[in-house]
Every structure is written in C-alpha cells, then in structure tokens.
Image (cartoon, rainbow over all chains, first blue to last red; front, side):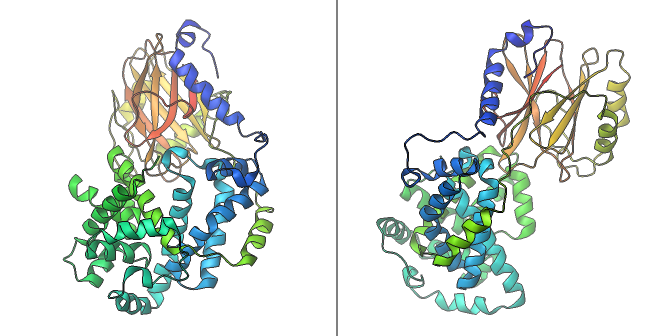
Length: 223
Length: 240
C-alpha cells in the first residue's frame, strides 16, 4: 500500500488501512500453506477448493469425489444422454479448477456455485440441441402426469433426497411441475407456461413462489 | 417493466429459465438491486438442493481423464491487486483516449453523475475540460485487480474527478465496484458505484469536495454497495 507523504491523513485512516491490509493478506494466501494434519477427505468443499486454488491436485480430486455424484446426476437429468452429461460435467470441473481462486464464499457455498455453473452449461446444451430437434418437448409433456420421483434415473436413496422430496410434496402441483420443467428439463418460463397451459407470464411467478417455499422448508440460505 | 415485474424474474433466473435477452436485462438490474441479488442467491441455493434427488455416480473413467486434464491447465490467479502504483505518465494519455472513445457508465452515489446503462455514452467535453483545464490538475494511477488499471484525474480546486479504467475485470451480476474517499479521521465515504463496460473500460465523473481526501479506494461489494468497505474486498487504493 502506498502511504501518502502527507502522513497523517493516511495513518489516521484506521478503517481503510485495516481493510487494505486484509486485501493484501488475501493476496498472500495464494502461496501454498498446507493445512496441518488434515486429510483431504476430512475437509469441507470450501477448504478443498481453497487448496485446489493453490494447485493441490489431490484436494481437487477429493472435491470431485465429494461433489461429482450431485453435479453429474443433475447434468444427466437435464441433458439425458450419458455421453453428453459426462462431457458437460468434465467441462464444469475444468472450469472449477481454472477458477478456483476466484470463488467468492460470500456468494454462496461451493456446491451451490458448482451446481449453478453446471446447470447453466447443461441448459445451454439442451437449448442448442432443442433448436435443432424439438422432440424433447413431446417427451417432457408426456412426463407431466407422472409423479416427480419416478422420472429420475438411478436416484440414490438418501436422507437428503427424502428431505427434498418431502419439501416438494408441500408445493402446489403447478409450482412443483414448473420447477421441475425449468430446472431438470431446461425449459424457459415461457415454454413452461405453454407446457402447463398457464396464462402468459404466470410460470415465472409459480417458479419463484415454489422456490421460496422450497427454500424456507429446507432452511437453506446463501451463506 | 416495473420493479415488481422485474423482481418476479428472480426465480426463473435462479433456475436458468429466462431467455437470453431477459437474462441480460435482469442481470443489468441485479447489478443495481441488492435485494434481488440476495434473493437470487438464496433461490439458487434452494434449487441446488434439488440435485439431491438426482444423485448419480459419474462414469469411473471420468475421474482419471479429469485429473489428467487439470495437470495441463494452470489455475487462474485470484482477483487481487498489486501494491505499487505505476507511474502515470507512461500510459495516462493513451488510456484517456481509449476510455473516452466508447464508454458505458453506471454511477450512483454522492456527488456522482449518473449515466445509467448508456452504452456508447460520451462524457461531455465540458466535463473533461473542467478537470483538465484546472490549474491544480493532478493524476494518480493504480492497478485494479490482476488485469486492470485506473487513472484518476482530479482537481481539488474545481472539486471534480475523473476515474478512467481499462481492463477492469468483469464482475458477477450481483457485485459492483465501489469507490471510497478516505478522510483524515479514518472515515470512508462512498464515492459511488460503477461497473466496467464489456471491454473492461470505465469512465466516471465525480463532483465533490476532495480537500480532506488523501486516499481513495476501490472495493468489490455486493450490488447496491456497502456502507463501509468490506475488509479483504479492496482491489485498489490510491494516494491522491
């Protein structure tokens, strides 16, 4: 940090001096600093990502093991084709490796960030595919009458999954279907409105209301 | 579109269900609406929970391929800042010329002229000359983040300041750059918010009393700005 030659102004500026100092320390944290005694497998995603940002490939592998079933599973559900799902998932993790140092914990958890990147990519993939072939529309429309959890492939029984399913059960049918079509089938809110025969403009409201209920039921927050 | 209608897009945005033009439109709004940004983050976290119902083991081969691939990819450095300002003279004038050519400015806050979403906006000649012509015109330059630079051209007598940035890193939709004026008593006063245009250029004009300001800072804050600079989020500090 540069100190003003006029001294007092800068020196007296405790608040800013401290803030700048923290910025500098953060920069210095780019240097490797092994977490003493901790096995990668015991670490949380945020810690593993921080280690990966310093070039620790083992930590990155542990992070992959910890998170990939959720990421790959979500991507597979969206794109449906295992080969494409694998491709998208690999791209996502390469991006994660490249941008590990730029993760901002204030914006949410590592998993939330990872799933956000993966979801955006998966949706981009199906939208560009859909522009060429419209067959998924009919496929998804055919799914509407089926209960939520029957359309999933290879769902791993887990307490978390049960918790989410319970929360989904408390949504209205329209909210649940709107969220499913948007999140897992990659439809825009306009397409969701058409598929569910909703008045123009209301699908986005259903999606938002449903997500708010889900958020409150699951007790998730961004921090 | 009213702010109520805009707000209704938060859920669809969180699950990537906006079309491209809506997405861009909403992201521009997010940059200025801290409330929407916070809601989007929480709804994204809720949407992420849905993936619990789709858990599937990835193909075994993927792990090995991925680990081989990362060995060939260098992680990007964090977005943090070098400490030594470079001498201004070397690049100030080209920077001014480039920044003046095409600028999108979003500025708000104390004493800052607002140029919301004016892609291609040109700062008026009088704004430029009001600073450049003043007898006490001075400059300071500073790196911003790992890729950018900013130059301040200011006149304490005329109470005007231009901030010209190049190569300023893009921010997520729910973050903003915030300028701080730092007073002698350790007070930090917000000088306004800005985001670079697509090319990383920034040009903002501020008017205000700089006579008690010896240092300025730029931090990355949540959209809507912060009351005080967040420790650790400072990307530039500038002695003036």
